[in-house]
Image 1 (cartoon, one colour):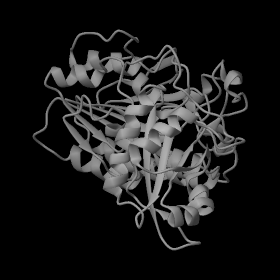
Image 2 (tube, rainbow, N blue to C red):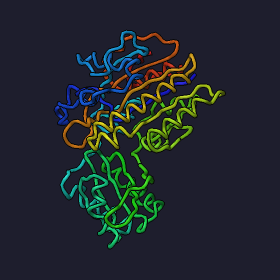
Image 3 (cartoon, rainbow, N blue to C red):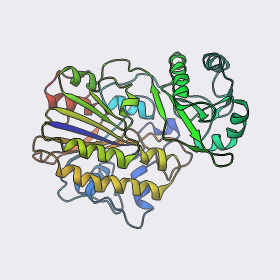
Image 4 (cartoon, rainbow, N blue to C red):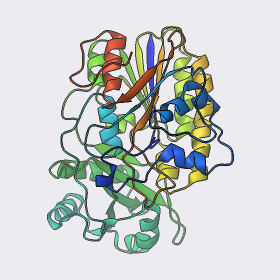
Length: 391
């Protein structure tokens, strides 16, 4: 039997009760996208009960309303951990609940403290440019020429707990940049920074572009996740997309580092075609909604990205065996119609489908770790420390 958890990155369902503390009281990702589209093309999600889940908060999704007979069990989940980043969300989905948020840094320079920057310079043998919060595409446009002339590295952050280092491939190969970021990861541990991200770029002056060589170096988990528990119980654990980056490949028997939603969904479809596979958990992140459209506040692109996923979900469902279970959720919100460019502190959807499973109302859950507890129950392993099973 197989369990598939698909995370539509940044697919929020409305502000959490503590959203005001994060500046997100007006955020409502799915609702705002639906309101701004003449036609919402999410028929699979609607049939599964996405509109029914929204109704739990007393709202209707225009063009994606309640299904009379939803095919999946439906609900919402609240993040219990402080924060609103991908690492926190995915870790909590896997059963790891944080008691304090990761460190974030001021937007205006200098963002990172002097002692951290000095350590990075000593470790890399190069000085740092930037040291501010910035868009990755914008900062290489502004500082790319100075970087090429000096060989200094471009250092920046965002509203998330990230330390990003960018380098042109004429200054430093991608492998050299990864080595620098591995050293930066060891330094960042002492500052409780969630992720160090290598950002190689290329191109001529005035037309710099980032390559697809991005690599994330995540902080180690503070304890075992459901991935560790399943792997120990001889269940195959497969990460698709950036799952391996977020978990430092810990607890994974296979890491399929596909780039972009189409590639990730193709990898999932190929994996599901394995006729001889038994007892597998497949954990999929679909990052485009967040990275390409949410942060860039592109409502139309966001809708189209979800529509692409929606069409692919129909094929995923067709490949399920009777005993399989499919869980569709998210890690946080990233409202493309909201102000700023940050993630948003929101409820996330919970859709649980199995060919032989009746649909029911799962209600509003108090932690994303209910997913991990449900996976433990599904595979018959010992319970996780947090969460309640919805199966």
